[in-house]
Figure (cartoon, rainbow, N blue to C red):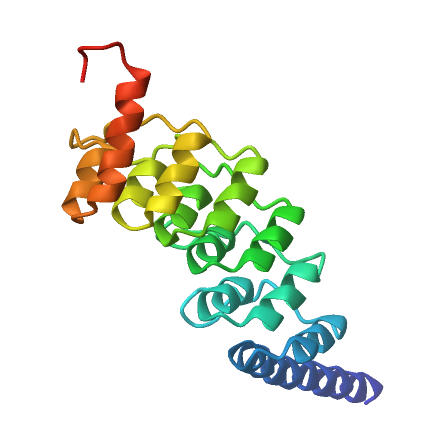
Length: 219
């Protein structure tokens, strides 16, 4: 009889924990959507796992950065058990998304948590250059981001800046030492990328850098 009572007691506790966790699960992702940093911190203090994934397989930090829920992202980054180096199926990290979206303070905080600045393949600098976010580009370079990082198809940050970013982003990379002569697997250079988007100013800037770097008569 006593064993039965004990078993029932344990069952009630287990079910209670399960229901509480289920409630916390919903509360967690709702708080991210609503950008309620304080709610998230409270859940984490009560033992909720910050690395819990949603039904689509994304952890809370990635969702917060992707959705622009800055307070939620800050709360998760500040929590020591949060993993900042998760990768999406597209091999994107929270730092890459923050760099693309121009979320400067989140970039700083992620780097302070040792987010990988020089992730192989597409790197945060590619994404910052794509968005033309000069401040983030400089932060990454100051953290020793490889300026001529190559994506899986050998595309460089300079190429991305030339096609999608801005002339100012192209100028920053060139002045920081980016190689204007590199080509991707299709044989395209940063000049080609700029011309594809009809960005003559950027193309002229890169062409001038090539002429300066090469002996006379080579360009």
